[in-house]
Image (cartoon, rainbow over all chains, first blue to last red; front, side, top):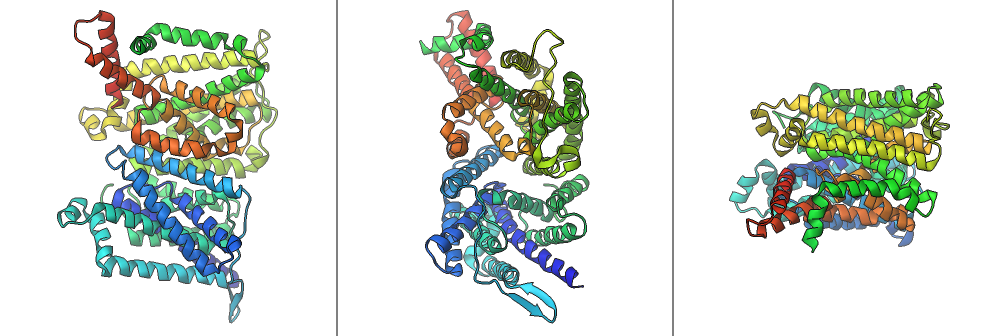
Length: 287
Length: 344
């Protein structure tokens, strides 16, 4: 029973992280129709920024997370301005190649400064909570609660504020948004900033129970892509649901089937689902 | 003057000159290592030609290309090192293997369009990498495969020597380029370009999208398998890193620098960048600091790469000349105009 409960906690933790990363990816896709391959690099930079702020500047975990979110948000805005904006009228293949260029660049820069060693980010939440025999490490609880709070905050922002509504409007209809006078540049920059913040926070939350290294974004970004395909590209609830599906599939698959192959589960699932339903699980109509 | 140089490159003589240079290269090289580097550049160029078929001509960004390269290398490696086959049967098996796997991956992945296809193939590439890394009973996992057989020369040549191997690779490269040239001028090549320029338009012209895309995909994976098998025969030791996604990204860089969807682009891009990387050895680890922004700058400002830019420039130059000039130049114009159009 306890082992089973552990897997549920694992699934929730993984699902929360994947969900946050996939949310940023799906937001950007919904607005600009760019599959941002560089998103995983933003995630990785987020982790390294937190690491840098904590170990080199000695600030508290929360401050480091906020600083990292700010840096990555600026970085994401720069990507939009310098790379994706000039390419807005190009064939879609160019966006993808440019995104790969950003990914390679960011990884190389991080590797130049910190090398390719594995590092550990220490968190102040190292304790273990015991609920009547059910054990939850504090950091995992923090990830689950943190992701939950962020998703609610994002929902409130998108639904209840004017600026948030412009993002939704852009995603629903580009021309319609222009007609009512929405500034496309502002929305694009804001969307990239939000996606950067989500990636940096997800990375900072997950880093203490994982490792920090330049290639850490690869697997996460690929899984995030699997998630937004499962959930329908551009769909916010789809990203959260997809994140949980992959998180649980991995936690239980890794425990009950095979640890060595747990990373393949997500991709196997994708291949299976796309073979049967090329438009994804939740997407309506054709893509 | 420059224009004359330009029209010179368009002539068939230029190709012969390039070939002649490639043939005498081992005699001009200072040492064996340079010949080895050139041979490895040719191997990569063959793989990049494959990528050019599906991505350049057919317009589908295939991110599993490095994976198929690794499958070619591993098929050859495992058959010769573990199963005791000799090189040439294993070589043919590697081609068949990549073609068959390419067919099955193709019929699933090509139902997806654009972004979905790119993401799907990214995942396929990663599955290939994970399988090679984790399936230790078959692939030896991270230890890699040792003692891969070199091509047997039937007692005539010794392909474990660098220079004979160089000529072997050169022969395959020339064949690959010749085949590409035939393909790009054939109805099939034009069909691929039509698909790139617009799925729906191509379909309304009566082109069977699925059949042609799968054909392009299988051709491209077979090219990758050919390059992978030659690579395994050359280095004779392979590991899971051959399937690393970075190889695919490298190949995209070569293709883009040289000129995507052009005939000479893959060769120029690959050989050029391999030599630049070689001469800047200290850059090996950090080369992406330059290549990353280079990719971005290329797609923003020069999306057609060296060859494409050159052809466009030739086209403008030829147009600005008054009509009724020498016949040879008007021939150049139509040839460059045609290729420039194909690249649009």
